[in-house]
Length: 307
Image (cartoon, rainbow, N blue to C red; front, top):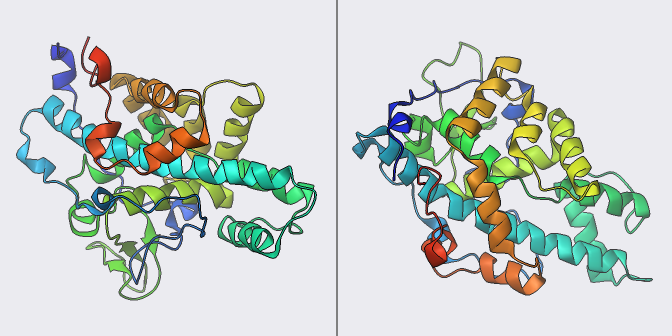
């Protein structure tokens, strides 16, 4: 049953402007095709539902109902993006174990290194180590909390008009939406995406390669090396540069994770991955319907507000 106290939660104010780290928008925002994934034969085509627009979350008057609808829409898109990254990681590891690489394999490594801003000789141990650190998933709890915060639970102008859930900026004229409060002389816009999925994909790439989020990646690597589950609460520490509010922003994101029990989705994602085989990753990355990726199978809790 839904906990009554959760329905009384005040929505966290929308953070419209950020510091340097969050300003950068990787390829994938407006201005053409925004699937920036490097070509990989084992990576299935995006399912049709990945291009669905954002629902109208303003129709929900009850706070808890809106949250459930928001998380239920966004979580499958997080699973989709993370599953595709895991397929890329599997391919990366297969190349790392080879004594000699083909031209096509070297080209894939070069393209990934360029996308993720890795500067190291192609095929070197250094390149593989850096790519392992940057070609990795982000815990659903962290993504859900930031998306809710930055998009006012999917109701902000930038979310509804540009499918932008994370407040990412772009800097070429016409690349996005002009902020109504933009100061005179500024040229930035708030990026537009063809779908919320592409916004999620772009956000993950931003955390995976921008120098401002080095600590995010360091904390994730520590979890990997200790063979511990990735923690959105822990990785939030690396978001100091995401907002001009600094430590207060980090506290707010962590509070949202705790209050909304968003670690529930981290556990659900681990359960969904099962034994973490390439076949499983491919199955998740090509799900025919977003509902197939939702929690609630086999009598399990369907949302963090149950129990």
